Length: 138
Image (tube, rainbow, N blue to C red; front, top):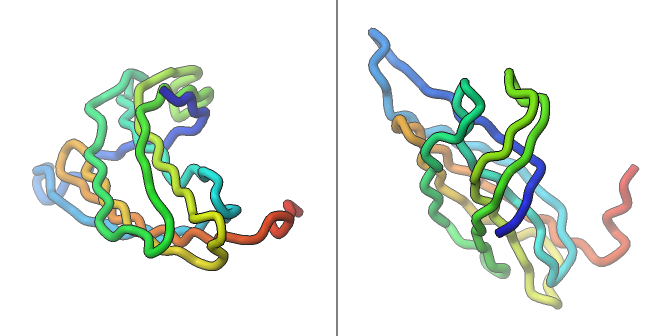
């Protein structure tokens, strides 16, 4: 099991007259990576208003990367000062990407996340695989 100190919340969506509505949202983002090394590309959990865990989302690799591999692992996610929760530890899933040793360039993948309540999120993630030493932080 992996330990992660990051949290993404889940919001319930309601439509006309307060009835739950199934909605799909597309999110695009990018991450930097080095060849042949695991990089975290997503953290998925469900934190309730009382700071306990709700049902976890369902995760599916909708469009796989052309070059690398994606794996999802179970994790315990710890967070402090998250919304009204001063400290919490809940179960979650963490997605990792790993490129081949000789790959440099952009690799694109899409993860479908289905949350309880009917909300679906398509996460289009561009992984920018750079040579070692190219990821200097400013």
